[in-house]
Image 1 (spheres, rainbow, N blue to C red):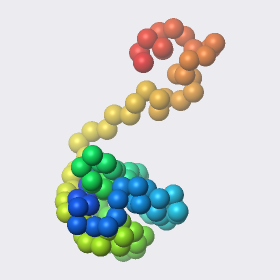
Image 2 (image 1 turned 30 degrees about the horizontal axis):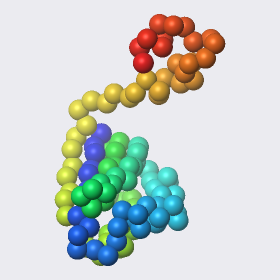
Image 3 (image 1 turned 180 degrees about the horizontal axis):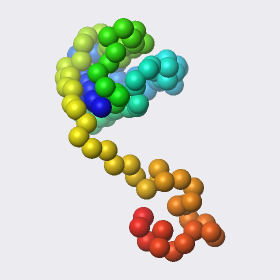
Length: 117
């Protein structure tokens, strides 16, 4: 597995975190649902420092023959990411919420399950 992290410093762009979030709501997320080998894509924002980016978690390296959706952030921001890094995934831990509804508080949940939260 592999993770790619990219981000832009928005100081040189007319875009803001708010305008880029609006673009996500307007449909920029949907094309990524169909990308083979992509486990997860997170769009990340740092309002205080004016940064915007993405984290992409892949099954392996991005397939060379795969056409990715347009990089809307680069198009809107007007330049390539200021920072780009790739990492091999050494381990994964999911939060307790990923265990399912049986672990949510309710009449049928044993007390010891709630103590682990």
